[in-house]
Image (tube, rainbow, N blue to C red; front, top):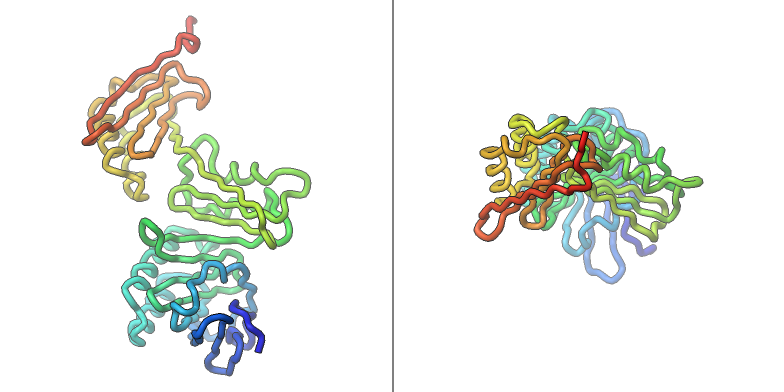
Length: 329
C-alpha cells in the first residue's frame, strides 16, 4: 500500500483515495490509526470536468481529528447550493456548531463576490469533526473557511505554476474587495512585488487586507512575500462629515472597529469642523490600529492631526504643523 495523505484526481464522478471503491473511499496516513471515509454527493446532473486541486493538504486538519469528508459538486457556489448542502448535512447529523458557523461565513463572503469568483472554484469548510468540500467546474481559486483567532476566516489560494508574474495577479481575483489603502491598493502592491525579468519562482505571495486573505503559490515555494497595506483613506479636498460617517460605517461592517478607535471616530464626528483643513493628514490611533485620513496629496501635508485613545478611551489630540511645509503664496 502506498502511504500518503492527499487528494487524488477526479475519476468518473468520484475523488480517488487509497483503497477506493465505486461508492466510498478510504485513506490511511502513515503514523496514525485513523481511516478517513469520503462520501461524494452531486448537486448537478451532468458530471463536472476533471479538476486539479493542489496545495490543500497543508490546510487540512490532521486526519486523526476528522471522521469523514463530504463532497458536493455544483455548477456554481450560490445560495441554492449551500441551502441544499446544509439540509443534507443536517439530515445526516453532520452539521455541528463549528461547521454551521463556517458555512454561514462562507455564504456571507461569497454573496458579495461576482459570479466569476463563484464558478470554477473549490471551497473547503471545516467543522469540529467534519470536512465539507464544494467543487465547481475546473477550480482556479481554492477557498478554505476555518476557525482563526478571531473567528471564521475565509482564505483564498491560487496556484500559478513555476513562476509568479504581475499578470498572475489579476484584477478579477480582487473583485468585490475594497482595499484599505486608497492611494496604493493592494492589487498594485502585489503586482509590483513580483515585477522583474520573468517574475519570481519558488515564492508564495500573501495579501492580507481587511477580510481579504489571498495567497499566490508557485510550485515548491521557499520564500514568502507578504503585502499588508496601510489604512489610508482619500478624503478628497478636505474632511467632510459625510466622508467621516462613511469610513466609520465601512470599518464597523468589516469588523475593524475596536472600542478605542470608535471613541476616536466619535470625537472626530463631534469636532469635525476643526479638522476641515485642506492638504492635511488626520491620524487616528488606538489598540495598535492606525488609520490615516488624507486630503490632498498623500506625500505632502501642510498640517497633521493626531487623535488617539488613552487609558479608559480618553481622547487626546495634537496638531503638528511643520514650517518647512508652509505655503507662502
